[in-house]
Amino acid sequence: MFGRAVLRKEQVGDQESIVYGCIKDSNSLAGGADRRRVNREAVLSLPSADEWPFLCRDMFSIPTIKVKQSQYQTDVIHFGASYRAVEYEWRHWIEKFEELLHKMYWVSATVHLETELSGTHSFTWEAPGLYHEPGSGDMQVRCEWTQEGRVSI
View 1 (cartoon, helix red, strand yellow):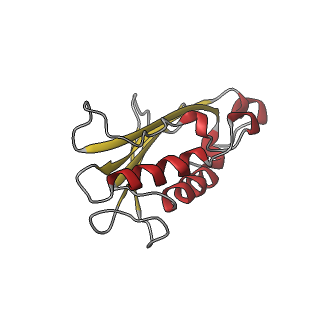
View 2 (cartoon, helix red, strand yellow; view 1 turned 120 degrees about the horizontal axis):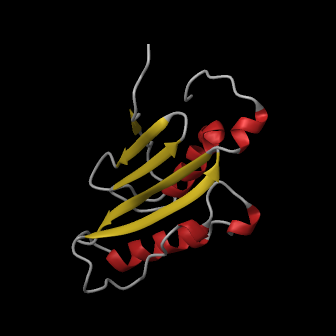
View 3 (cartoon, helix red, strand yellow; view 1 turned 60 degrees about the horizontal axis):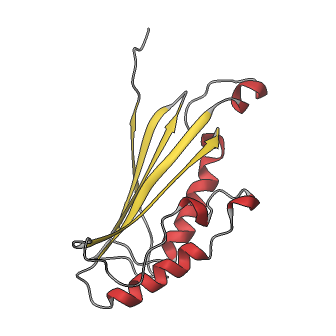
């Protein structure tokens, strides 16, 4: 997925990948407390970091049920983790992330994957209507790739 470079096994082991992003939902839509409760339960249903899954609850902020006064119009669930060369198993990571999104209410979600060899990839999911409802519809993702540094030809 991220190029055709042939690497020795020991090279892959030293590569760090950083994954971070956020899932956004609207505070202005009906059923706010119920929506936050469903999203909270979805994140809490993830395994712990001790099990080394692709996604774990420890990497996510846990949404509160009540809206805080500091929140404006959008609930933001942010997440982040450091992995060893996760881009080689990226398809599985995306599958797990989409399983989580399938259980949640959201308007949009963004994941950034920073890799040493392949640059930065940004993935964005947007709800087809006003928002995604748990268990509903297909999800489509858009990917953008950027790579910093000089390219030698």
